[in-house]
Length: 288
Ligand code: BEZ
Ligand code: FE
Image 1 (cartoon, rainbow, N blue to C red):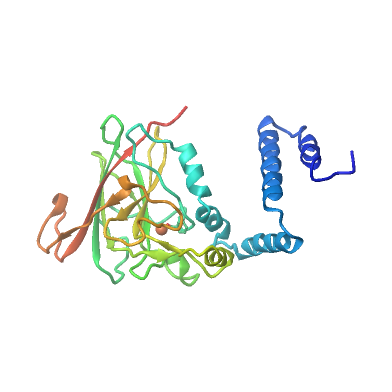
Image 2 (image 1 turned 120 degrees about the vertical axis):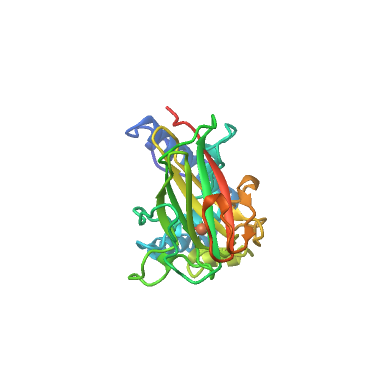
């Protein structure tokens, strides 16, 4: 086939992918071609605009490194990450709601005993995190693995610092036999997602701010259960209604409780004023 034009090229490309190596690759390729061509017929880009689009994607790739994932930011800021999340975690079974993973998760974060200070003594308002992990039947999930990570009071993650800076404000805990876990750290702040690259330029052109409301990330895993990737958002934070990555859900917004020194929340004595975040998590049974 030859002599392609605006009207016959879509079917021609679809025919070319018809012998894909699996039905799923065929389905995805066919749909991608159909939607891409529909987009182009609707937008009718000039050649300069199309070249600018290619240049944007090129710079997005070039910006990526071991510590900077510009494509995740692109996906997050266009709502694609939350749409994939919604498709895969429709909810409704009583489990804790999910939200974006984001680019600052680090595999193999340091392990801490329950009660440890995962900020490793960083300056900031002290925060005690207490939680519980149960299944949808209300049974405790003893030994669940809990990854926690969050920003500093200036809104930066450890991995945004110099390459040789230590990991902090992140750690892995294991719930006790009753599913309880707790640790100490510092109160995180709202922050702009990294906006010194192509995605930052896109946000500016789209007339959008780059901020996320203050939150703590949790990833909770246990044998026989779906791994839960979520945040707890601080209820006093700005940007809860305009999170740049569309990640906020009402059920994940939670107040901090101000506690004076000398109290023992959850049986954990504190010797200085502290904010308490107490949140109970519920995991879904693993899907077959
Ligand atoms: C985060 O919460 O760490 C995050 C999520 C999406 C984009 C940038 C950061
Ligand atoms: Fe975050």
